[in-house]
Image 1 (cartoon, rainbow, N blue to C red):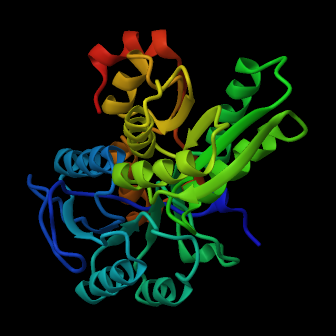
Image 2: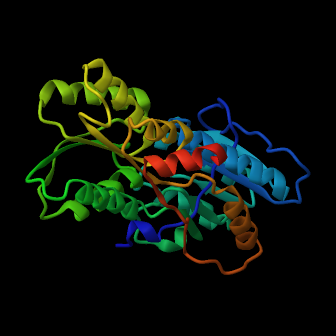
Length: 321
């Protein structure tokens, strides 16, 4: 079976609240004839908002007519949107899959209509890699590994470290892969995940799950959150319990959106692994090449880094998201 990190490309567009499926809007500008249908996951986090804005603005610059739907984190809504784009005969379809599996039927429909598909941000798990042209996004396994490696360095010499994990949406590529990378990094060490539960990539979800963790465990040393928003929710729960985030309980997150970076600079988060949402320009370039019949790489990985407290302070003034 194909590894998830060799999947295809997808895309994102338009900020704001739009209908769950089939809602269209133009990104503005003067279209050059290329029309893209994009099925976004939703607006569950600051990262997703920045990702959507990046695609919208890149479409404007490229003169691409952008049709957009917000799936509200439901796979059935994305499938309806993709079918709508097939019926509208768009030039290219891009989407960020809510979950990894269950896409073969609708992507075959796009393939039979000769409409290329690009995956962006998240991959699919399918044995048939002809269903998409390329996948543009982060290496989520590497992100999880970076988080685990930092924690090992930070806790070197300690016999045991108790970690609670705030997972992303169940079945989503980043949730699966960030867990995989982290557990690979800590294997054979004294670092142990004592509890793991989905917070659905939302701040409210992170807070609720962390509240439950704090009631069930009195020995939590570290929170590993699959995104900044859940980590920020965990901070609220930790403070409400009379503890100091970043000191009594260390916090590691993934994304590096502005709110997360500010919390890192303030010492409430201890380490952030970047997941770059600004994929718009690369997506438009890939879309134009695919529609023109050019060969493109099957996997395009976004360059990313990590941040400590001091690095966050230095980066914040020029942060774009």
